[in-house]
Length: 127
Image 1: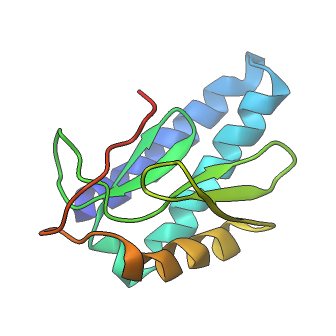
Image 2: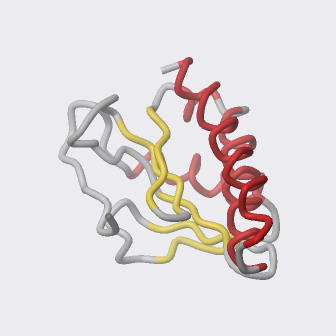
């Protein structure tokens, strides 16, 4: 898992650099995902989980391969620099935050209610 935590920010940095010719909103969102990854990597409780992204949403899995087992709330950047935290099923908005660190704090707070490695799982509704 440690390798994934080291590789994911590099991947998003490269994507952000290549987004120079894309729409401004895509640049903002990729910058937001990178900020979320960096904030989440500082949380020991999240580093136990496997981080992955779908579209511009950061997820945390108890499994390191498909099918992923969502084990925490998901978090996504919003246009304008804010962040939204979603339930593992994406059916409920847990909250919004002004910073990546505050959004990640909401994710960590939601770990108590989320299934662990041996619990039932939800799967991301995106791609």
